[in-house]
Image 1 (spheres, helix red, strand yellow):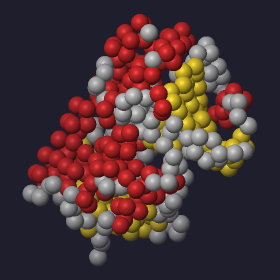
Image 2: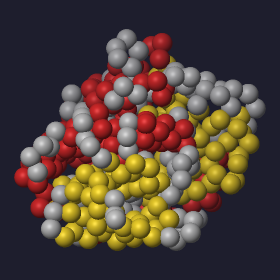
Image 3: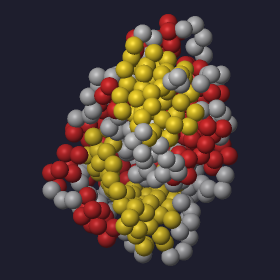
Image 4: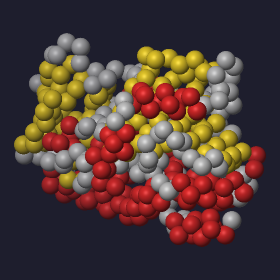
Length: 405
């Protein structure tokens, strides 16, 4: 007999596991977490998380995940014309916009473990092959990653959290993002000669396609995360391999690092400038995280938005007690709330991204932030989407502050 679940979540990254944790804390009866990978597993990312993620972890009573990790003490940024700003934690006189640099191998596994401890059924190591809806149920055919063995499960609600090339998204009739609304990133892990303080640095430098930037994120130990991200059209116009562009960026970095070439991998980032439909009430389905293109078009940040969507959706669905109609109402409310919270925010970040493509404007912003730590905090909050920064200070106010700085 096939197993049946109230909720089937495809994708056990931060969005999917946050949703599972929220569902189970809210009293959901059965949750299946499905992912083709077995955990712990690596994930191509800059590994930075901000205060918005911290708040979500605390809301889920998972703040202990951060114990033993060093909080970021400095954020720096350079412009292509040589301007540089540095924000030190000691200079901040308000709630800090700085967070942590934590390997996704560690973070994702911790979130998954918490969801399993709370009662999720572990179906990691199984990939979704097909999903069809009949009556009021979804039937999902899964294949075991190693052996190809198949099984079928059923679920009342299907949630797609399965990344940039989401199969669930396509099964729901939503095409993937156009190149114009997609970025690409390449990341490599490195080791420093001695421990480096926890810090994040973004560099807009010659040789990295525009719009795009390079990063170097230090965890607080010898481990360093280095990478570049840029829009797909800009990358294609460059006519260079990603690894060639990464080599150009590595030559810019002053610190001697030992790079682990086996960790050099790339990933696509579907940007929120082309979000698909998020909720499908008639089909009892929803999309969250990268599967829903919840990635900031200015920064490439996606963890916070995916986790926030998972939290919102999980809380709403956990309270459904009255059958399909109640589920449809919760799904509709989820999409309405997420768009109300973030649509203007994503639109503003797209404008900001297009604005700072001009080197002179980027230089002015960086130099203004170098002189005013409060303005620097405002920009970080605006670009990272951390809870307090969404909608609190419109882009035009930041622009005015920059002009008069």
